[in-house]
Structure formats: C-alpha cells, structure tokens
Length: 156
Image 1 (tube, rainbow, N blue to C red):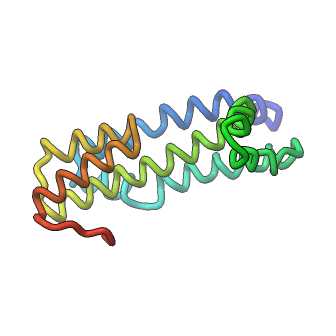
Image 2 (tube, helix red, strand yellow):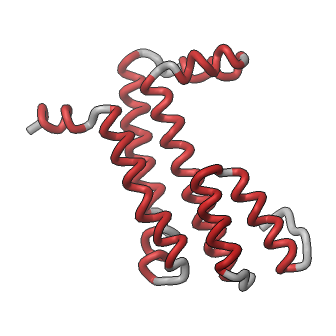
C-alpha cells in the first residue's frame, strides 16, 4: 500500500492533479459564481487547503533532498531564477503557489463583482483572464470596478 502511495505521489502526478483539479473551481467561478456550491467549494478554505497540502508535501520532499534553501537563489538575479526553475521540485512548489493565489484572487473577483453588482459580461472575462494571466485579470477587473463603482478604493 505504501509503495503504491509513493508511486502515485510523484511530482509529475501532483502537477497534473493540481492543474486539472483547479479547473472545476474556475468553472464554478465563471459559470455559477453566486451558487451555493460555488460558495462552499471556491469561496471557502477547501481549494486553498487542498493546494496547501500538496505544497507542504512538496516542501517536505525538498527538505528531505536537502535543498530547502535553494529557492532563495531567485533573489540573486535572473540567473538565480533560472537555476531555481531548473529544479523540478522548486518549479512545482512555485506553480502550486501560483495556482493557490490566482484561485484566491478569482474567488475574490467573483464575490466582489456580486457585492458591487458588476455585470457578468465583465466579471467573467476578469476571472478567465486571472486564470490565464493572473495580474492582468486583476487590473482588468479593477478598471471595470472603478467604472461601475465610480470610485477608486485601494483597501478592499
């Protein structure tokens, strides 16, 4: 049983499970953002918790490899960043980080657009752009929100 578990939890499988696993959350945010199912799964701790478990597992594997401090090389310049991303385990942990943060932002956009009654024709593209291009989706939504709310607010 343990041997089967170890062969299942390869970095490649974690990557695939995480990538395909976040898609239902994004689809809920895009197609039924105000539904109770979306609120339970996307706007609660469930999705971040699942990604956090994978993140902790990968971090533990990095610790066991003795490379826990290798990630700090990214602060030394682009060459350090290139070296960090050439390491499979570090690349995966950064990808899990990106998935968790972008999903959190997508859920925030869905909630915030409902609070401010922003039409779905603008919130849906904002969520989709956030899925594919993170910060660009946030900026797009922020500009739409300024137009609809008629004020700039930096602390929401």
